[in-house]
Image 1 (cartoon, rainbow, N blue to C red):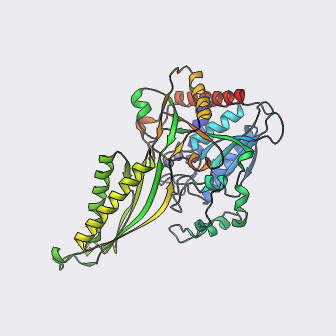
Image 2: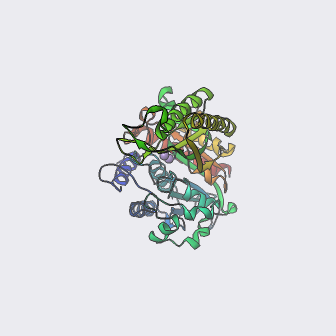
Image 3: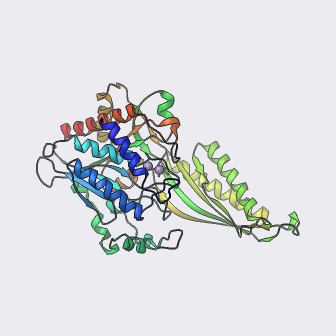
Length: 406
Ligand code: HGY
Ligand code: MN
Ligand code: MN
């Protein structure tokens, strides 16, 4: 079996660890997270790494460099998923990293090599994303302990249920002087590589994103008896805003998405008295994103005023844009050249990644590989075996190139 076949088989195996038999969903601090960590730890050990689970539930592994205790180059990605996920977003990056480590003879690099399977990148369970990587980077906010999941379980309780001691969370922090940098391989999650008929790219920067919980408050009432001119229909107001969010985003070249929308009380014959919905807003540059946010807020106020509604917004997540480190980028580029691509493609990531958090502790860079149709956050996510081979070889070469100049 080739390394790429092994990686793809392992992605399939990880995809069976799900909270539902019908689709893939594996969230932070769940029993499935524990099972995935155990499986990944076993693969790390087979690859020659010594392993531990850190104080934030990140699964880690390490091989020493020329001396014991040298600062570490981190390779990794995440093993949590969105609801009804594909099997490569995150997991493929972890498995590529393990396979790179398996190709490195311990005691030969001028730094230690560590692989991290981050516990929470997506934020599916608690709304706030990057919890694993923020713990590692030392940017944890104690207010997050009170975040709750859909069953009302707090993050604090979830840590305890998982067997982690919240008081020990600072132990997950990696001091910058113990690190050399962070490299992540990830599927592109967009169509740029496929449209250009290319396998790999180096990432220049990662888009900054802000996420909000939005509410339109109106008044519930009888669907038959309430004339239109007396209605304060929260869902129609929210819907108007959803359409406006798309229009404003498109005109100003930022990316705005409403991914959740729920009407309350939720009866077929009841005018919705409240609509709760979400906003994910991102752009290459934070200023562009924030200008469109102001326009969305104006539109919301206008719609609410005209329809007799009240609009409320609550920011649940913010990560500003991150520029990839030039030295690490060059290492990734030389990795891509090593597989015969003389002119590596370079572009910014529209998707968020653990590197956005890790950058607080150490410089970061990323390698993208093509995925089928640019599809991600969907069970149809797919990659070609040849592209996995290319990514693995390029990723290994990037690590070796970094070692040469270190
Ligand atoms: O939402 C994102 O960009 C990432 O996939 N978490
Ligand atoms: Mn994702
Ligand atoms: Mn991802």
